[in-house]
Length: 412
Image (cartoon, rainbow, N blue to C red; front, side):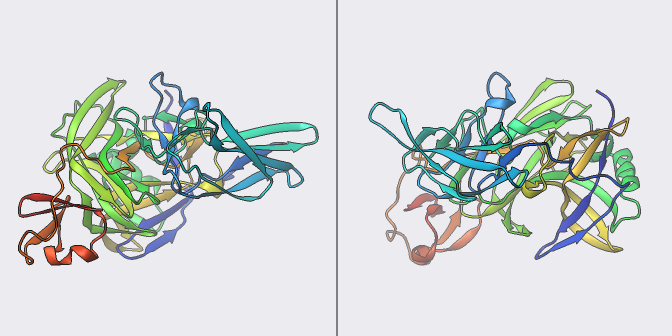
């Protein structure tokens, strides 16, 4: 594969309580190519996540996952302005399992399925000058009330529009002085200086009210890496900021599997599923004390749309306008990736990081405990080991699984 380089079009640092924004460019480049004669697209609704590759490795036919009964909001885009568009979407199934559908011409569109199951994703079709074009966010449909399987995680990008590449190690590797020097050379003249990469993160903005079971990632490394070399942290995220003092879950490295071409599939498991009620920031980094060098695998979006722009995050230390910042995520928005001949290879929006979870409360191996049988001042911990109060505080705590006096407590 030819050497690639990254043109950072816009850069932001996620600080402890707010987001700082800056812009740095290497050379003038169009963010988005001129639109085709007919184009149609709709925004990925908040609350919808996508699976990784199908078992056959086909990116174009993956499932999306969404909670059953939740209204999902999206917006139609069609160009040119005079294009006419319409929605075709499922509303239910009949007694034989055949979908019942409906249509809409609304620009801002809501849809939902009340029952758990697999349904077709909404299809948006545009017509203009005799031409007709359709778009759907998931070719294999949406699985309502599910959150993936052990080998098919939910991730925060659209696989149907991506190609995974991994040859950015000269720029983004952890524990690599050469990569650090190159990254700082690329960023020379910008607001961010003295950048040192410690890991890389993925933002999950609308992921509350599910049980986190595991995290997976794909990384590139020219060194042999093992479970003792790589780790993950899951931080609380609040819209534009991340609370790096609050870890939502503790996960152990479960598997590091070579998959060829210096690429590794890595999975991290929770000892017990953790109930997530907020957005979160997942960071993959070298294990404590490890000098392992690896870089993120990059989903490269060929069809870049500024209206649905993603974020690629580096977990790093740096200086912002000359002032030292603590270890946190440095975000790159709408980052263009070019080949060695300066032709655009696509736009970088995310890393290949995903999560496995369930919308339903896992019951296996968990015994219910009647609240009130222990001492009222006994401390109560969440599954991340953080003390959240005492038994007397259970009424004010959100639904979930807790631990007190060595026993699990389920609050429904």
